[in-house]
Amino acid sequence: MPRKHHALAVLVLTAAVPLAACGDDEEKGSSGDEPTKVAMELKPAGKKPSVSAPESIDAGVVTVDFTNSTKKDAGLQFVRIVGDHTPAEVIKVGNSWGDKGTPLPRWIELEGGVPNAPPGTSETTTQALKPGRYLALRLDGNEYAEFEVSGNASGRVDTPAATIDATEYAFEASGLKAGKSRVRFANKGGQPHFVVGIPLKPGKTIEQAKAFFASEGKGGSPPFAENDEAGFDTPIQDGGGSQLVTLDLRRATTYSPASSPTARAAPHTWPRAWSPGPW
Image 1 (tube, one colour):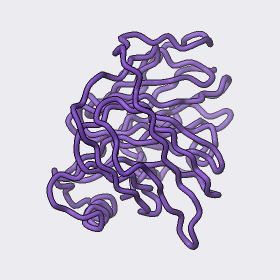
Image 2 (cartoon, one colour; image 1 turned 180 degrees about the horizontal axis):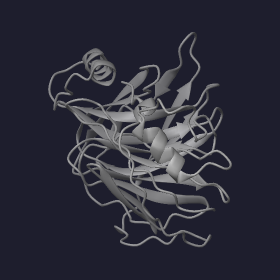
Image 3 (cartoon, rainbow, N blue to C red; image 1 turned 90 degrees about the vertical axis):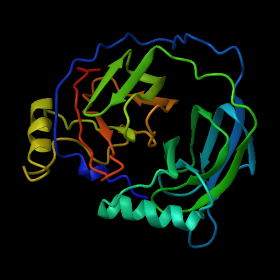
């Protein structure tokens, strides 16, 4: 089920994002309950890696610690399956949606997950899971583990000082700062969204990024470093979903993040890029 990061090529709008000073995260709105701890892993298993996850997870707020024990970057997308459908159906329909633009049925719900982790490292996400049947799916290879979420969902995800809120064709961000910090990504729109952060190449400007996006990728070489390890992305969230992810933003680097709606009718991404200024 690809996300098509290379489709970041249609609309661009520059917006100012205030830069907070470096320091400890300040969280507010605590639910008062500690999230359930869950461990997941992608590990080598012959020609293709395998995903391990608990068979059952309590509904409510969970913190998922994901370990990537393979030699390539990897993350997990959580997919909630509504009704009597198989994982093979999810993968077939999801690939058709990502590759051909066929509509994504409502029985597939995109419920966040864990951002990409470099080889031999870990990533953590905190989010609410409602009851149902899920896949923890590696998008780049379609490996998965099934798990069931059961019980009464309770608690809510805390709000840290740094937030990114996405809607259709727009976003709002606040409190982003240099260094590693927890950021709440919330989809306040009606379509699936994810966020990609792409560092600009030295000497390049946000205006050049806007022109490149407006040309739909035909305006010469991109002004951003597509494979830079300082880049980031988030899993896909359906409308109304949110989660806490860890972002490590470099000082003295200008980012061109894109708030990317991935429409159920056709998975086009319509970015809004911003320059937070030199960190």
